Length: 168
Image: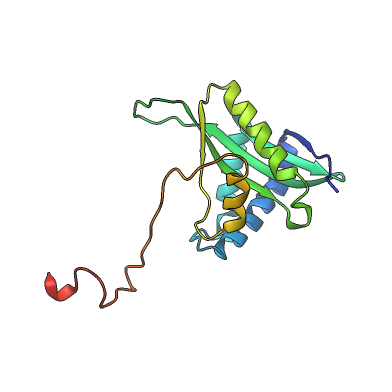
């Protein structure tokens, strides 16, 4: 059954609840290799969420009178000249009990509309490489792989490295 969520701009009164949802998001991303510490960043993220609220880039999803998801987005403001105005989707989260009911898709659709209204010609986002569910969600909505990130632990060098310490 598809819940008809209410997607609306967040209010200042929502900030603590959204910060808690962000902590849950960050904790879940740890299972996919994220280095972001969830609880330790609650206060900093609440400040970031407040900044998104101030610029109109914070949406919430309500279902069954509960706050069940959120999205943060902005227009990229960099120092480089680009061929397209890029909208950035920095967070999209739906509580696990409410997933697969169209809420994430509704949040994404409204965020895309708001970004388009602000002049975005393309929307970019990041998903953890091994979070196949998130990557499938975005692919199913027309997102293509844009950039590949790579990481390596400095402390976990192996003898198979191309340049060993002995090679200088």
